[in-house]
Length: 254
Ligand SMILES: [Zn+2]
Image (tube, rainbow, N blue to C red):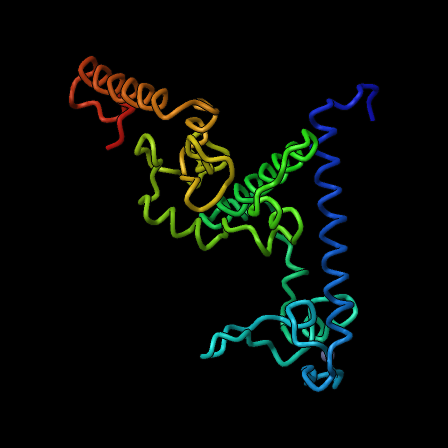
């Protein structure tokens, strides 16, 4: 502990995330309570403990989809501390016991995207709370994001991001530079809100290098275009100076 008062901005961010956690816990508890009041004949029986539980994601572990689109569940109940046969008997190596360091996670593209996604969701949450604090009326999108469990309703999913990365050919959407898995690195990928978009929606974001994202901040499309042009020219000037043989000189992507 130190004697410094917490920064007002950090204090707000901390409050907002702890309030979010409390609201989400309440949403889940209410949902479980409601499910426990439904007709038991629709419940699913666990192959291990023989207990019946409502057929929802809160009580069962998902296991693909049926041909008609319905959710399929594992034969063991699971996923809540109250009924966790799946954790106890369903898996040979419980994932929960696996220790992965942050460095391990950052060895994969999925790991990089997952880390950045968390930041995007958190900043969307903060923006909504700032609007509420300012007495602004919320849009339908904002209401949904605020009143439900973020991980279950936010449209920017890991699948969307993995698809985006592949479509961008593992390169920055603005400079064309290649992303790197080496971490930490200036050329790590980051999720960039396109000019004119308020939230991190699939249409509203693109992947850019971290240094680019930090550099442009909230600048406009026009300002970005000028910067992009300057970067391009800097690269060609550089290669003129060092000659065509020196491949490492320019900033322009290969
Ligand atoms: Zn069970």
